[in-house]
Every structure is written in C-alpha cells, then in structure tokens.
Length: 217
Image (cartoon, rainbow, N blue to C red; front, side, top):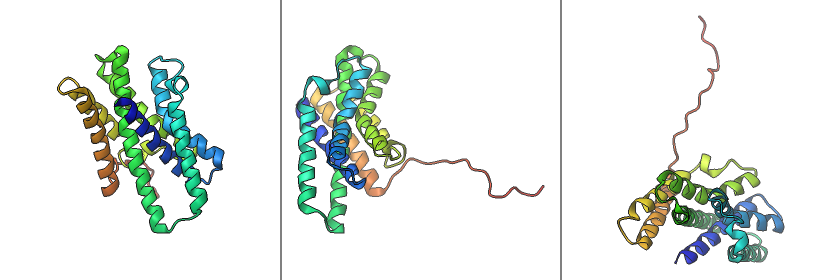
C-alpha cells in the first residue's frame, strides 16, 4: 500500500514539475530534470536527514523510472497538442494543483512514517519536521531551479498543510490502524490545499516599510 501511494505521489509531483517547466519554456532535458527533481527530491532530502545513504532514489530506480515515464507522457502530449484553448489550459492548471496536493499529502505522511521506522517515533518534532521537508523538498528544489519564489513562502498554505497532515498521522497512529492514520493524514493535506486553492486562502503577510514622506516636525 505504501509503495503504491509513493508511486502516486511521484507521478503527481513529476506532473507538477512538467507544468512549471512548461511555463518557463524549458527544452526536453529541462522538463525531464525539473519533473524528476520535483518527484524524488523530497525523498532524497528525507534520506539524507535520516542518515540513509545512498538515498532511496539511487537504490530503487522505480521512482526515477515513474517520474521519467510521466515526463515522457507530458512531452508526447505537448508535442501532439502544441497549443490548447485557454479554457482547457486553465483546466490543466487545476489538474496540476490537484496533483501537487496529492503528492504533498503522500510524501508528508510517508516522510513521517519513514522517520518513525528509523527509530525516532518518540521524537514528534523530528518526525513532523522530516514529514514536512519530505513533502515540500521536491517543490522547493523545483521552484529554485526554475528561478521562482518557492511556493511554500508565498501561496496557498503549502508547508502548513504538510505540517497538519503529518500531525494528524502521528496523533492517530496510536489510536487507529496505520493505514487509516495514513489516509487521514493525506486527506487532511488534500482538503486544506483544495480549500486554500478554491477560496484563495493565504497566510497573512506583514511588511515593514518606511513612510513615503517624513512628517514635518
């Protein structure tokens, strides 16, 4: 079950990476790099934090293969379609948001689960921290490589949703069967991200600026 969820998250994140690469008009190599990094980058960060070397992406090629297959499908679709009506392109962007939310939820929960299985179950701070970084790590790398302000700092309650999902998973783990805790954590992330996208929720922004003109004394 966990393996299937990880594959779903990998494909979902790879798709979102392809969308960003498309918006930046990258060539096919750039699309592959951005799609793959988005898909497996968070897991690599998780493994480095937990001292698992080499990271799982190098020990089990199925994740890179799944990301590559997603990129190939995206490139085939882009080459065949060429251009889409604005309405259809907007719908595709919405699909990207859904895919990104699924990937975020899956990797946030799986990251926390991996930390627990490595023997850190008694340290909730570490478990949740690893979960959040696993969820946002790939997207963070994607945005930096695409020369964008990372989404986790600017839009639609991103890292906070990953944190909420990890917390739900950790809290429920001792109360319900593990699969129920996993699904609840993923559903929490997906629900928060979906509502944030539909209702345009963002965290508050406070900026301290000098006045345009000093008042006369």
